Length: 429
Image (cartoon, rainbow, N blue to C red):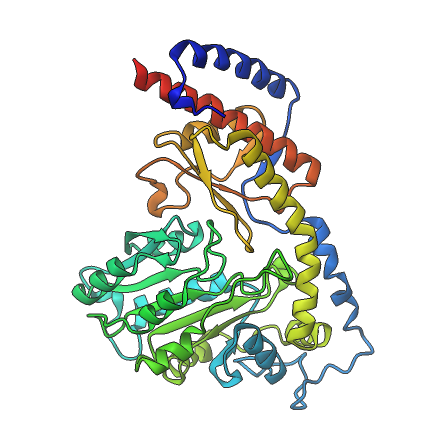
């Protein structure tokens, strides 16, 4: 297939007329499709419906330690829930605290606590002249929203196939005491689906930050969210590597069952060193009388153990895999060789990251919306919503039914072609 940039102006104008006619047909359909967020589909939610039958009015609602889960108490989570989530994220059960349904809430609390009360006795961030965070890009918009909300300055760090640019991370962290943290989605990253290499994890663990209260915010969102049973990424365990490197307190590891069971009523957790957990529990003793122990008990009795979770997630993979493959096949069939876009083929996670020609992402997203397909806003994968290249677009295949997903993806590639032609014609003037 001949690249667009190698075609004459006349060839491009002819092609543009043909594509515009096709685009008008899409507009006439009156579509209302949504590929904007990585929500599980109804089919995925149905996989967990058996969990609704685990507890009823006749069920023994005492946890293993004999505590009535209907009542107050057990601030940091029942023991069997700790063991289940600890196995899920490969940490010891005594280094984990169980929360409510959202790991995002735990991350927000962690930043808020650092702002108001500092980290393990350090100066509260609100009393400092400047607080900064490193943000691997493209990255997770909700991470960036938390730090922006608290007025924290965000610094872009480019992603590589191995993870964040560690030369840049090491330099910035070692030279600037105002840098207090870095956001990470280390496995099947949002949105690219990249898994950090062993060397990247070890370099994180060996960081020598200028700030004593610097922390790695390690969001283990997609730990078991594989697309394939026989081809799965693995990653070194960061807490263990930090201990080996003599930096046991440098990481907060977040996780949840949000996209495993029910997003609206999952179980979240934070894992960290004993010193960090002691610091966190001081706030929790004031903040809550305990999270939903009945939900914790329900998860434990439904999944039973890590094997139960893994088996459950293969059912999710059976739903997700065809959707990812459908999108990737359309991208390959329609765009391969045209040199107007690039994308990665993730082995897991929830997104496909597409990079258009520089200066085209916003126009592509707007054009898709005009024809009835809502995409994630261009720029969302960068702090402050500002993609310096205006090129990255996050595709979320999970939520739409397959027929709608295929239709939306075909419209998307049509918009990519039309906007790219305009960009190339502009350069030929």
